[in-house]
Image (cartoon, rainbow, N blue to C red; front, top):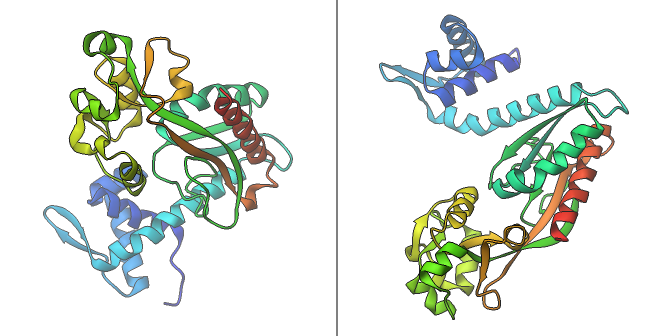
Length: 296
């Protein structure tokens, strides 16, 4: 290889890998199909290897293409982070900051915090990614993350906050219809709302509460917002943060003395961003806002 392939080639490669066709990748990037095809040909020539097999069904990635996928996604995250950083001027609270948070935190707890930020800093642009997966702050998939797990990576500026308690709750309409269980074993006679996919964190909970396994649920969904909506609708008993239930008089605690989980909360940011005025302003606001949430 005599010349390092430019970012445009890797961007076209990633779009083709994710879209599965030249036409889909070209639409995603706003390019013509011939231009995108030339990018792929140029990258294959630079790498000295084939990345895709052309077929009537579209583009079939080779093993090498699949291996390069995570690296191309990391490049895309870094390029996006560079663009966000370039939007701000030194010392000014302006530009774009990308935040990652879990569904419930991002949809319920953060909007008032972000509204306050925008009121104080109207030149600040916020990007909010709702995901229960741990966004990689080190690779800059997000600038700042609100994590419901202790931070493990080095090179992160992290602020641990008081945990958020999760308990079982039901709507008053469900309680009027089905009553309340007296013990954890009595949950077998109730309509339960819970997860669909078992994760390592869930397996740790099941080790303590085996009666709350997937087979026990009347409704299974991996969306925490969907679970909360089902509880509010009176479908059954489900998992809800105590601070959320405390704001809603129609939500009733269930077996509060027998079941409770404490979710760790941490605000994390790449340490390279600690000197950035907009990122520091957002980080500090998230710490203050989530500390207030944890305090009830």
